[in-house]
Amino acid sequence: MNDPIGDMLTRIRNAQLRGKSTVSTPGSKLRAWVLDVLADEGYIRGYEKSTDVNGHPTLNIELKYYEGEPVIRELKRVSKPGRRVYMGVKDIPSVRQGLGVSIVSTPKGVMSDANARSNNVGGEVLCTVF
Image (cartoon, rainbow, N blue to C red; front, side, top):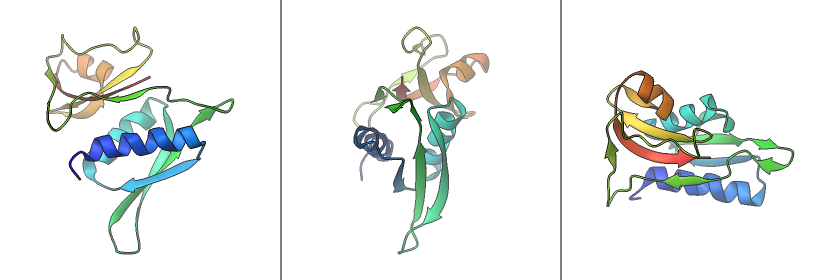
């Protein structure tokens, strides 16, 4: 798999289109950190770590809906394996005038754009969520 974050975002997007309550994805630390940000910002209910039949780590994500509609309206991958996107703290974009969130991988960890600005740190913009 070339783009594990992109794969996870696509799984979430597809599960929400189908109205699923949960979706599972192969587990990794980076995926868990991205899910932590999504949970902190209120876009998913949460997730739990488990292992599949072969002993591989798995993340089971609980999706969040409001009045039958998915809370996540738009989920876009910004930095891709073929084109990495790095931004300084002043260049980190605000999504939909602050209504959405950019998830940034910084030297201080994976965090939302607001946390990156408050910590005065830039990094790789992984994705945007609205």
